[in-house]
Image (tube, rainbow, N blue to C red; front, side, top):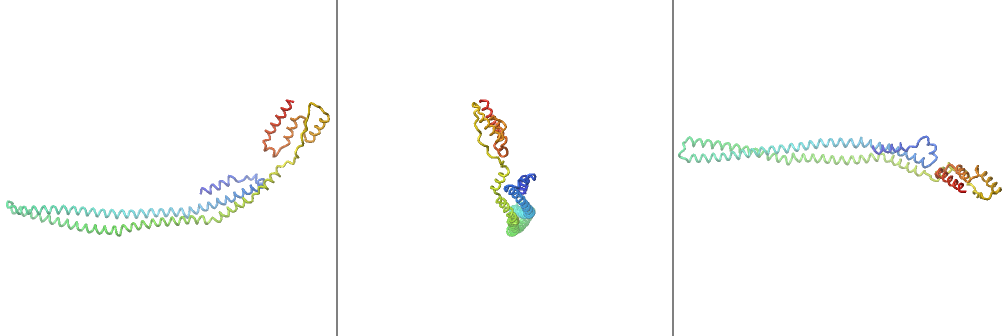
Length: 310
């Protein structure tokens, strides 16, 4: 959008004013310049079409795809985290069952050892020995129960671990892979669509560029120069030679000749100052490009100095 805005600003800023349109139409370079501005305005319109199509067909699709991919990826990652947490929880249950079994087994061993000692001790009563035997049986039963629980949790853990690494987790990774491939495929499609948007207006842009080249080829510098010459030529003939005036030798004939020359060249004064000044005043028009005021002042000053010296 920035480029077409710049194009339109360029056309607006450099559009010729209507008051000068008739005068500017005389020059091929200015006619070509206005034609170039028209083509640039058309180019700006095509850039607007490209920007609008990219906005509607590409950018919106990218935003929608990115949103869906973020949601699906978050869902897959949460699923993977849930599976991992479930496995870790089961492993924790197995560890607790194993520790309980180890503790029960050690207590059962101690109970068996205590019973054998009591049974071999003739100083203990039969009731004490029976008490140790009952305790031994209880500890053995608890040890067997803990052993069974440990075996059960081990079986559950191994089964869940196998399912986790062979089925559940690969499914999550496959889903993540699919999402990444979908993202890459979307990038491919959007790049191609962006190029298609440019292709759709390329014939019109090419036509505009051809118009710019045609406008440039229409410029004729020789014809433009002749227009300037016709517009600013004065029609004056170059002035004749200025006669020498010897003031030390008053000569009536020379004075008459000088007066006649001044009258023929359109000068009203007899002095050198008047001659130069009046002549410069009559040379107007294109001679103004040579800083006419400064030249006139310089010429006047020089002539005046000569008269003073004389």
